[in-house]
Image (spheres, rainbow, N blue to C red):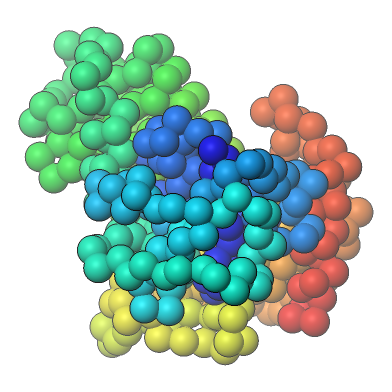
Length: 389
C-alpha cells in the first residue's frame, strides 16, 4: 500500500509556511507530520501538493493508495479507523476529509461517484492555522516523545547537569554540561549530536533537534520545538522552529513559528501579548485580511529564508512571508509580504537575484546546495506574492 499525504483545504490558511513545503512536512512536536505517519505505519509517504512543489515532493500512487490529510496527526483511534478502511471509502468529520482509500489515483479534487463516507467521531489534531503549531505543541511533543522513546534506553547525561524530574531522553552524541533541565512540566528530548551549552535553563517540554545547539545561558520555556541544525540563544517560550534556522543571541521569541533558513539578529524581540490583553489578530492569506486568532498570546509567524537585523522589534501577531529582510528601528507593520526589504520606514521589493545569492550562501554553510528545483519553488513564491508587495 502507498501512503500519500494530501494538502487539504487548510493549505492556504497555513501560508507562508506551506509556500515551500507540503502540509505533511510541518514540524509539530518532535517530528514532522510525515515522520509521525512513517513511524506509525512503516510507510514512506508521497505527497499530493501544490503544482509548484510537485517536482521536489513527488506524487507516487500505486495499486492501493491511502490518502491522508497532510495536516492530520495520527492517534490510536485514527489508526484503528484507517486499518478498517476499505477501497473506495473515505473517513470524514463533518465537512473535513481526513483520509481516503482507493485503488485508482486521485487528483485531490473530484470524488469517484461510488465513494462511501464514514464519520470519525473521536478527537484528533489537524493543523488549520500556523498558530496551531505552538498552541497544541505540548500535546504533540508528548505523543512524539512516547513514539521515539518507548522500549529504548537513553544515552547518559553528564553529572555536571541539574535534573528536576526524570522525563529526559538523550540520543547518541548529544552533549550537555552545567545546564538545568526541569521535565516536571513536559518531556525533554535532546536529538542526536545536539549540544546544550553551560548555564542553559530548560523548563520542558523541549525537543532539541539533531545537531542543534542551545547557546550559553539560553532560557527555554516549553513546550518548545527546535528542529535540526539550529542555533538558539536568549529567551524562547512555546515556539516552533522548523529547522536550519538561527536565533543565536539574546532577545525574546514567544508563541511563534519560524520556518527553515531563517535568522533573527541579535536582540531581535517579539511581542506575544498586547498591552490591553486583547485577542491577537493575524493576517490570513486565505481571506486576505486580519482575523482574530482567539488567542491572547501570539507572536511571530515567519516563512522560510526570512531574516531580521539586530534590535528588530516585531509587534504582537506579526506574519512575515518567505525570503524577506527586516531591519531598522521601530515596529514594522504586522504583515510583511514575501520578498520584502525594509522596516518601519517602509518596504521595497527584495530582488530575486539578490535573495538567491543570500540563500545560496546560507544553505552552503550547511553543506546543502540551492539547486534549480529549489530556485524554481522560490521563483514561484516571488511571482505569486508580487500582488501583495
